[in-house]
Amino acid sequence: MKLSNTLSLLCILVVSLIISYSFKKNSIDKTTIISEDATVINTGCIAADGCGWQIKTSRTDSIYSPLDLGDQYHVNNLKIQVSYHKLKTRFYCSKVAENPGPGVAEISIDSIKPR
Image (cartoon, rainbow, N blue to C red; front, side, top):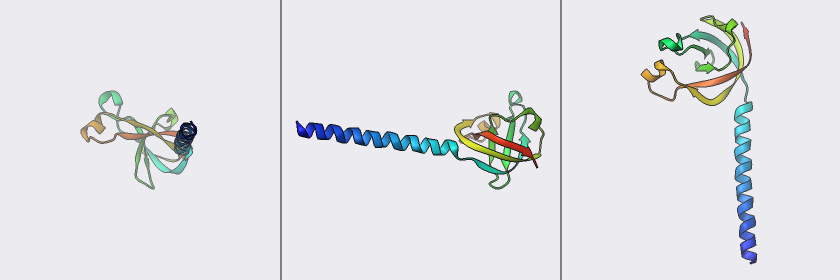
């Protein structure tokens, strides 16, 4: 009987540690805010096989699809200073379909201003 209780407690402990680690990992991903210079680019209307408004970063030369880019920033080649956090979702459009891959990473903008 004691062996059964010991195994049950050990199993509960292992499951608790796994759950605790997974929550910690997810919260780090969601709270990492990145600030950098970037450029707003218009890749064309999504309805006409474009990928819409995207942000190209200056430092890493990465392209992201923002979920919440305000209309006042819909200016092609607008230079901006942006703070954002990466999401685990990706945006797929026709241009991405021509060059199969993982899609464009989506971001949520925390702050943005022209530079």
